Amino acid sequence: MAIDTSVKLVNDMDHPWMPLRPGDLRGPCPGLNTLASHGYLPRNGIATPTQILNAVQDAFGMDPDRAQLLAYSTMLVDGNVITDLMSIGGKSCLTGPDPPKPATVAGLSTHAVFEGDASLTCQDFFFGDNHSFNPELFDQFVDFSNRFGDGFYNVTVAGELRFQRIQQGIATNPQFSLVTPRFTTVYGEAAFPLVFFVDGRKADGRLSMQDALGFFRDSRMPDDFHRTDESKSGGLVNTFIPQIFGAHPTQPGRNYGSVNTFTVDPNSAGLDADCSLYEHFVNDIVVPLYPNPQGVLKDNLNANLGFFFGPFKQGNCTRIFPYGQ
Ligand code: HEM
Image (cartoon, rainbow, N blue to C red; front, side, top):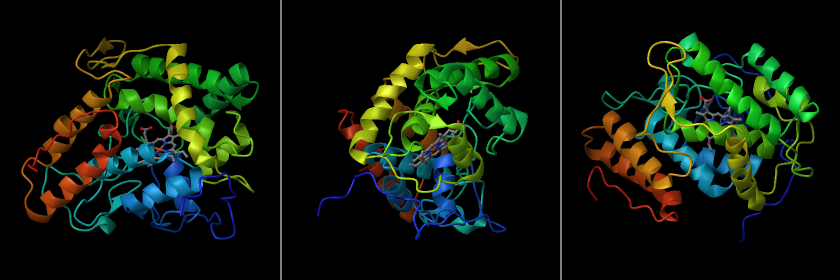
């Protein structure tokens, strides 16, 4: 049977928003936080990549390739590949016994593997808390939406605010870093609210401040919220990303220990570099965490690397086998 990708009610009776219980974990992703607070993911914030893959499609209409790439890339660096569990927030004993170091298995909030600088509503890691909703940054989100979007977060606002957060990082964070893969994800994440946080019956790329606050601060869908049409969401995100980038094109790079020392990194993949992004992720991020895996760990790493490669296959990238075939 064909999968239903249509617009549908997702804030429904089976998925009521509930407040956090002691011990429930949330992290830097307002999308996954919302899924957990509505019970599309386990409410404690510990999930398998399959649960994440299904939930982002079912509740937000995220396109399967993007969902697969996100779910398995983060699993490989932030999750426990032996137990198949990942925290959507900080480190947790609920993901089971850790594989040997230097693996960290420290959850989605872990800095510099996937989580990174220049978030729209969270502070940079350098300033202490890299994963909580930051009210001052949300004030800036509102201010930009008023100035550039008539009170809505739209693609023009996204282009201006994305650039502003990068400029702020360069000017205030001595450790500011915007290299692969973060250089790519900052543009995708600025586009996501335009597509996935806007009611699918409207799908006009304009997010109200009330709805934005619900998602970003409270992990909560608006009443009667309908997901967007999955068959169109991938195309929309892919249209918005170059528009956001094109408003103020930037290059990957970092500050070197003091503010305003931003230097372009010529070795970091740019926005369109799909295969080098894939290769960098496997060789320079996954392998250093798992230099010499054995047994089940090795088997499961290989399986997850295979799932992660899936979306790149269509881009004619060549699969890498760091642990043999
Ligand atoms: C498929 C699985 C997903 C994973 C593993 C994931 C992971 C993450 C991570 C680690 C971050 C933090 C990056 C940072 O700002 O440092 C993030 C940010 C973000 N995610 Fe997700 N995400 C997923 C799906 C989604 C979905 C479905 C949505 C929208 C419904 C979404 C919306 C966002 C937004 C808007 C941000 C940026 C927040 C900000 O800049 O303040 N994500 N995500």
